[in-house]
Image 1 (cartoon, helix red, strand yellow):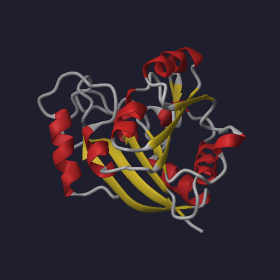
Image 2 (cartoon, one colour):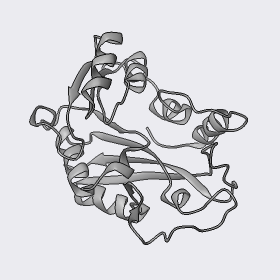
Image 3 (cartoon, one colour):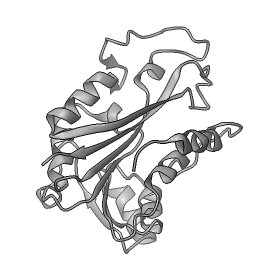
Image 4 (cartoon, rainbow, N blue to C red):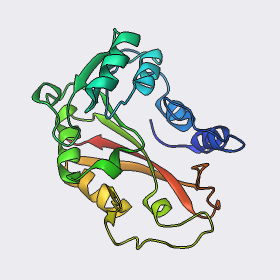
Length: 214
């Protein structure tokens, strides 16, 4: 399971000519994941649960975690077969840190809320056995620094942003490595957030695939 040429086609399917984002898994993620039959999957920051439900539709046995009790209550009513856990993705509860998940999925929006990048990475590694997989889909940090007219409005090397944190791509890869995982694929895609309307020459998102080392 790695980003491939099919991912690029999925990216176009999702973003070109579509004005509003949809809830759930991005098309590019669905293509990358493929068949998840009987795989144990942990979905980080699951929000209202649509993405976790799609993972279950792909055949996975899903556990999903989020900080919001309200969101989890609503998701639990809609999809009772999924295990919903309230907690912090920077400090996963002990019951999730037992090396039992075949795949951990970290969706868009997680990075900006992290204060402890190493804690997030070490928690993911603790949740999976040797050769366990991480798939991460995120907005590219450069997209946070460029406005819709392609003008730089923020220093890429300044980690502070109003209300959130800017983690550079190198910091993310380094934290994953320090956590005991090996990055096997990293794909960057053109500006894709419709409300930003970035030029396609500007990176807008990235898809990262890593495995836990023994």
